[in-house]
Image (cartoon, rainbow, N blue to C red; front, side, top):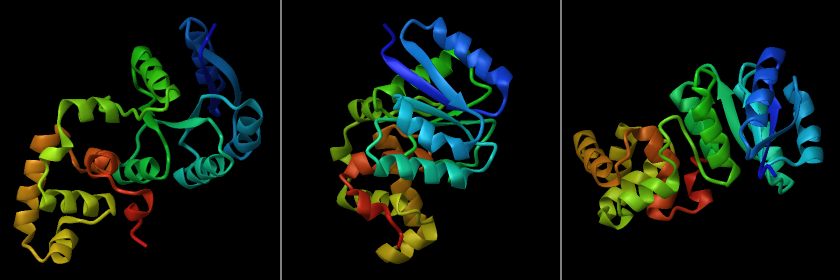
Length: 213
């Protein structure tokens, strides 16, 4: 019996039909419904209560993030995955900070999309690089970060640029770059986006600390 249920918000019938077929052949994933417009998604998701919501991004990011926030407010068991042709890095960062659990490109091979749905369906974080939280925490010890490096991570999670971090810590911008180089080496993460996404787990940041307001 399928263990992970998937609901889609996607305007293109051909993509929905392909998704339905692929999930029906997976053995452990179940297609449980779809809507074509984001305005219809909230009521449908609260009614169906799937494990994963695969959300098309072509209608804009803002309404999707409102949907994710609304689902969190209702304690929905559903985890959101953005399904996009492309998504700018800062938009991806914003979405993940606000509760999206996965970002999958529509150009992904079928196997990678199924992997994404399976990982997110169990409550973990997934991105194209597949560097979700548990893997990198097991691979590298966060305790290896120095107190100053942890301060840099906290400020990265608040969305600060190198110049802002330097001003906040009263150090040179070049010193911030050196700290970041050491942080990437110690954690195994590849870029600022991955660091911003996983920084909370790395240094034990509470959710309200990541707000710049």
